[in-house]
Length: 69
Image (cartoon, rainbow, N blue to C red; front, side, top):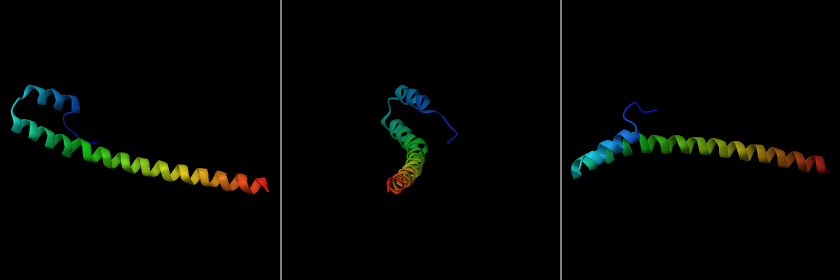
């Protein structure tokens, strides 16, 4: 994980600053540090569990078909 301020800390810091450039910098930091790695990790986990579920369901389906004969 990324070592740094949490989302709540960044949110509190953003609410205190009213300058537009500060908000742009904060949005850039927030998107660069937390959003993209989290989306990448979630994508990998979703892909892994999806492939695992397809494999288990496929094996169970073929097993039930072979035992039905």
